[in-house]
Image (cartoon, rainbow over all chains, first blue to last red; front, side, top):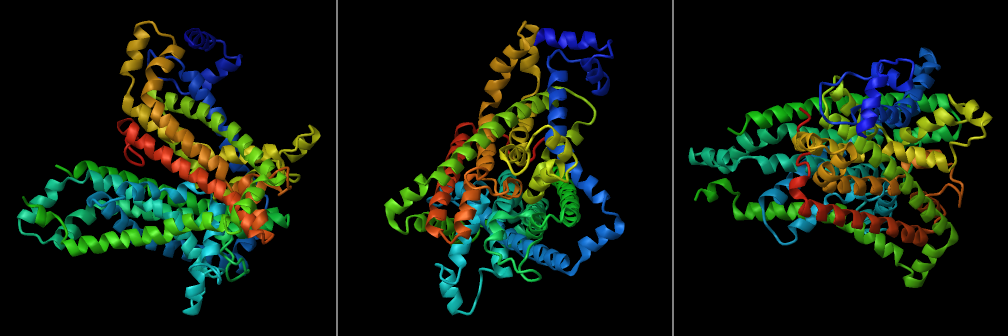
Length: 303
Length: 283
C-alpha cells in the first residue's frame, strides 16, 4: 500500500502512463499522511462511471435521437398523460396519508411507552425489506373481491383491487417508512426543555404542539412526504399486481414504460422514462434543499 | 414536575397509540400474516412441494448468485468511496456524494431499461457486444448488472457519514507509528465501521435478493434460466398458481424478517457506532 502510493506519485511526472493520466485528471488532494487516496478515488470514479453514469446517460443519448417533435408526441399522447395523472395523483394521496399517519406513528413511538414498542419500531421498516413483488401479490390477495379485506369492502360497495384506490393503498404501504424514519431522529433530538418552558409560561398543550413542536418538525416532515412521493412515482413491483393495468384507467407510468419496451417501442419508452427521470431528479434536488434547511433549523433551534 | 403540561392527556395518548397501532396493523402486520397464510393454504406438503420444484430451486440459485456478485462488488466500492470521501479533502466532494445516491432516485423500471438501451440489439453497445459474442441483456449478466445498479448506494451511504464522524486522527497516528495502509484499514478503520458496514451489507443484500422491477425488465423471463425468486413469484402468480406463488414469496418474506431482525440487532449492539439521522454531517 505504502509503496503503491509512492509509485503513484512518482509516476505523476510521467504523464504517458495510466497512473500519470489519473494524476492529472484527479483533483489534487490537500497534504495528508494517509495512503490510498488516488487508488480509492480512482476506483470510486471508474466504478461510478461504469455502473451508474454510462448506463444512465444512454437514456439521454437515446432520447436525443428522437427529435423534439417525436419526443413531444411520445410524452403527450393521451394514454401517457392519463398514466401521469394516475401515478401522480395516487402517489400524492398516498404520501399525504403517510404524512398524517407517519406523524402519528412517529409521535407514539418516540414519546409514549407501551409493550411491544420496539417490535413496532422494527416493523416500520418492513416495506423497505419486503421485496416489492411479494408486497404486490399480498396486497392484491388481501384486497381482491374474495380477499380478507376485499370481500367485506365489496359488500359495502367499495372496490379496491384493480382500481386507483388499490394503487394508492400499495403506494401507502411502501411509503410509510420514509416519513417515519425521517421524522424520528428529529423528534428524538427535540429538546424537551423548550416545551417545558412554553408550558410554564402558560401555553396549553395544543399551543405548544402547534407553535413549537410542529414547526421544528416541519422540514423533516416535508422531506419525508417528498421522499414517499418520489418513491411512489417510480414504484413498479408493489403496484403492478393490484393496479388492473387498463390503459387510460389503471395503467401507471412505470408499467407503460415496460409495455412499450416489450413491444420494442424503445423510442416511446425512452421518452416517457426521460420525463419520469427528470421529474424524480428535480424532486431529489428539492429534497436535498429541504434537508439542508432542516439541518440549519436543527442547529439553530435548540439553544 | 411539569410533566402534565408537557404531556398529552391520557385519553389523547390512548387514542393516538390506537391510531398508530391500527395503521401499522392494517398496513404492515396483516400483509405479513397474509403471505404465510396464503402459502400454507393447501397444507405443509403442498408448501414444501412448491419450494422443491426444480424451477423454484433454479430461481433460488440465481438469486443467491446475483447477490453473491452484487454485494461484494458494492462493498469494495463502498469502502473505497468512503475512504476517499471521508479521509481526504478534494474539490467536487459534495457532487460525488450526490452522484452516489443517484440510483435511489431512479425508478426500478428505468434502472433495468438503461441496460437494454446500452446492450440490447438496437443499443449503443449492442453491435459491439454481439460481435464479441456477449449476451448482456435477457441473460444472467444483465440481471447482475441491473442488480449492481439498484444496490449501488447502500454500503457507501452507510459508511460515508460514519467515517466522516470518526475523523482521521486515529489513522494518522497509526501512520506516524509506521503502519501500512492495509494495516491501518484493518486495525484502525475497520473496527470503527464494522457495524455500519454490516448494516449496509444487510440492506444491500435484501435489495439484491428482492429486486423486481429492474431485473424484470432485463431478464426476458426465460424460465429456469433468467428467473430470480421475485420473478418466479410473478410467473406463478400470473399462471394463477397462487399457493405456489405465495410459498416462494414466503421465502422472500422470511428473508425480509431476518433482515429486519439483524438490522434491529445491529442498531442495539452498535447503536453509538451508527450514523444517527438519515443524512447527517455532510458538512
